[in-house]
Length: 512
Ligand code: AHR
Image 1: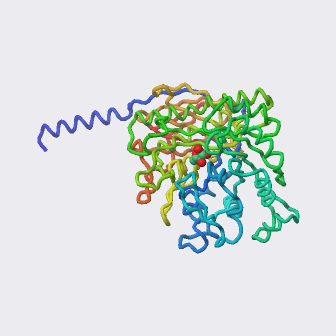
Image 2 (image 1 turned 120 degrees about the vertical axis):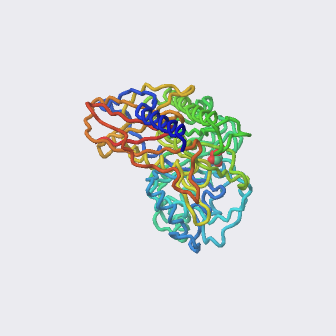
Image 3 (image 1 turned 90 degrees about the vertical axis):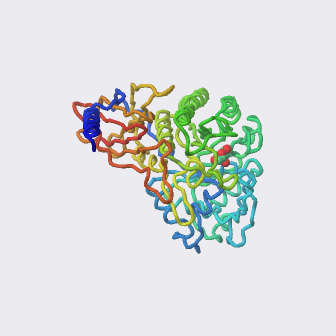
């Protein structure tokens, strides 16, 4: 090293070490009001959607009892264990668009004798129907989740739907209940949520709102689940206030819940949605801008339902939500395979924060979709499985399931047209206080200072999810690139919680 280089190196080191403690961070202030509890956050807001689509079920959940992949009666052990850890509250099946071409009779009885059908919506894939009614309800029992069954309105009949429900739920000696018993299930199952129709304006039958509302009246009049259920009327794809109003006017007295769908496309263009990886900051920012669009939609839907149901007895459901990108290059057409990066982990957190803020009316949701499809929790390839950043966000948010939401007010610097920091707070069923904070800014840390009103806490611990690159993600070869780590950057003093959030991060804090 020459004298000049040594001098430069020393000066540089001095500059860096002097700069480090003063590193610039945005400043966020706010307060949590623990004395003003809001609505309970329904655990079902953390629901999962699983459709007969690509490897979402076949290969991803179901491998069959004879598979070399370790399984329990045909269900992958690794997937089961990961889902149990997530505390999945409810599972929705069989679709989606697939629900409106599904004939339930193809999925019962000896598997070797089940017919092969074509999946018209998803790549015309040959469906062997190994995963049918018994497999779905048994899987839900293994996961410990409630059930959300979607009946076929597009190509089915009220008789078929009513018979399917009788087959599943009847404790009697009816011929259908006895058929269920002959197929191996003595006790009836419970259908916790029953979806009538799916996107009836599009893949569900190209209907007008009036047509669907009349059909809903008809179907709900014939379907009689034993043990009760929450009957859900489907909205169109995306939100349409006129559809909601028409449904409430014509069928409102017969429904328990109304479902909307909303997907985040970075470009907002269904022909070129944007890639799951290999994007820049403009696409990062646009993804969050489009994610936030769901909140005014929820509020608009809520306002319409309020007109008909001021006591909020009927629930709003977001039957499908999540990111939808261009498919992974080379993946089979119609299988909706996409990678999942730190961006998706933060999108999940932002959505969950929004759901908590609107929890009075919004009481169930289903991220699309649980395994291998769209914004998945888990990706599989043969015997390999990897947890995605979205999985980690859901796992970090577990204490919010069933917690009581608390008002959280934040003053945050802007990030483009958004606020850089978003958050949520709640009193968990274990009595602890939970605060989640998301920093969307990919280039700047944020110093957060929150006054805690009406709460005493002396200890804070937490978990952090962040990554180096904008599109950092987990692969089968590097499954731990994005994973939560313990967070020791939070402090409690004089009734104030302070924390430094790294750029592009999610932090979930436990206060006790
Ligand atoms: O989740 C994929 C598809 O998106 C569903 O089948 C449909 O309901 C929606 O359009």
